[in-house]
Length: 544
Image (cartoon, rainbow, N blue to C red; front, side, top):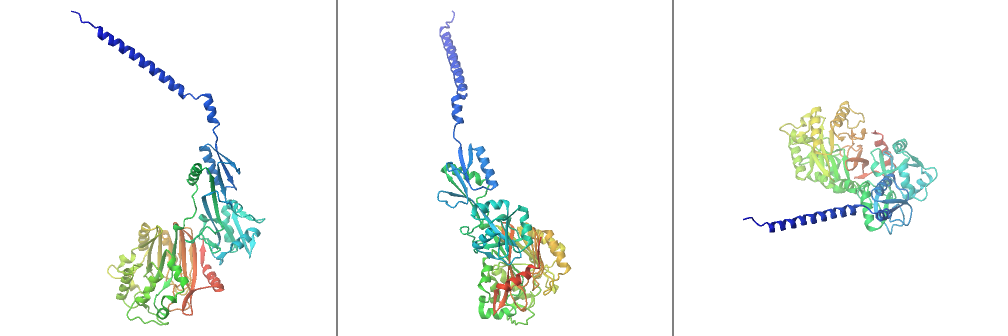
């Protein structure tokens, strides 16, 4: 009997109808999607007429700002209209009425002179006189073309005939005369310049306050909150919010030959305590991030010292002065370290360690003596090493005995290379040369130049009691003789404190503070005596 297929045929027909229906719907949807993606003429017209964000600028902007804004306008359907009060966003440079503005960026400029000028500070009034007349109290002033835009947007009256030069001519102008001043951006400060304070405000100081300082280039912004935020964030991807961060300023204080507690110091300390050192000097050392001293006097009990003493010693009370003054590292490579005995030198090293003072250039054995001592401030690491070139050579450390660090070229090279791996700045302390002669011995120049070649950043001489030559380049500083720090046996010593200022890892300023013993107090020099002494020190400095 044949099988009836009626039900199967019926369902087949239904399936075919469903397939046709689904196909028809799919085609319709596809056509609709294609049609929806075709831009209608009237919609295209509406998009074209969508308003652009307008940006106004007040006062001439520096080129980097102009370029950044032009790029923003291209990428964000914006238009720069210049000075127009109807704009959505306004960016103003150095406007006086800032009530409706938010701060955008600031740029600090510095007033500088040649490194060896004795000028330290001027007033805003004196600066204005210079800007207006171009000459005041025998001083002249220059700036470059880019700085000229800042000057004109900040100060209302600029004199006729102002000296605007090219950027690469500034240094040439400064080096011609100590009477020439220049206004430069903070980031262009080098050791060839001295930064001059204005109303006692100095941008290389950690407590620098921009509110009253006249050389600040300020940019402001106002407008729609969301758009203002967007524009501000875009600008700051190219232009830093500020070109100076005080937390990245680090000061390093260097001092020369010392024998703390010896000679006349013992009676001064016994009579007046730490107050035999003027508070100004105390503060200078304490406020420095890192302070170095070289001390030749070792502990002794008893310790008897007079003005005519030729063998140095010190007591724990006297030695405590190093800690109380705020020193961080102590060089122990002088040629008087074992004047009392080998055992007393060992006790002195133990005292430093117990009181958390890093000693360098000497140690309990030769390995300890050659070990770099690393001190860190503001994420900048300084490694201190040193060597002794002077007799008695029996004071040298050996593998098993304490003493100062011995040296030859290979030892110096290895030690500097090791220090370089541990720190950003390597300081090499050399106990060498004449005490009272400015002439250099041949080995001093040979070893100093080799030390720099091996990677030293700073070389200091700590045996001379007078100022010797100083050579400064972009990469290194060699102070062949810093003079003495505190007067001890010899009253006619030349004493000074050297303060180096770093911004990040770049040295930008060297300040020399001459000191002397006056009426049983170690004090700073002032007036004409300061000027004449500084000129003597500067005459031994060569900056390339």
